[in-house]
Amino acid sequence: MSKVMTEGIRWAIDPGHTRLKLAIFDGLTVVRSGAWSWDALRANDLPWKDWPAPVGVGTGAGVYALDRAGAGERLKQLWWPGEVRMIGHGDVGHFDHDYVDFKSGRQGMDRWANMAACHAADPAGANIIVDAGTCTTIDLRVAGRLLGGAIVPGVAMRARALASGTDTLPAVELAWGKTGEIQFPGQSTEGTIAAGVVCGAVEECGGLVRRLLANSPEAGIIVTGGGAQYFDRLPGLLTFADSLLTLKGVLALANHLEDAPLTS
Image (cartoon, one colour):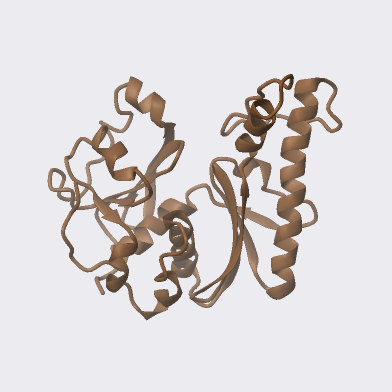
């Protein structure tokens, strides 16, 4: 196992389905971060072009990304140093015994990274991780083990389903990072859709979290993802929001990698 990176600039990338998330770490400290839609990145200059360069820029060293479906091709269209170290299920041989339950390959790389971030912060602890992205994942992690969870439609996906599955209901945009005040009950068609989509998702998530807490009442609840603002402060539950949890997990996984060939 490689030594934990405690100094030097490293870049961690989560190339999600709808957005690219990036954090720059100096050792273990976040110095810059951001998130952009793929369409915005294709249409404009790369917003990170003047950010601190990673260690070994030009060779790909110090640049790590989750190997999610289609991620490699999307990054090739944007990436300026030329090479990125993709972290995927094929890297399982590079992780130590603490990650044994992460090796099945049955869970997505974002869930894997979230688990790794929590494990790095508290190896013996327990967490329920709510990751509100395109889909919302709810996972129970106890010590080094992933004990399972649930995957449900994300908030924006629910709103789109109502518009595409009916003849008369309008599309309601629920923008990333814009909380606003969701009025309940809603006072217009758009308002009732927003109220039903958001409040319904929050109530559903709270119910699922409580079912996991019945198995592990000591677990702390961590909320992350682009839609985290809807799920922070779940009714009757103490939550902790960490918008960079997945990217911290990318760095934690990179810390466990032996030297391996870079993938462009």
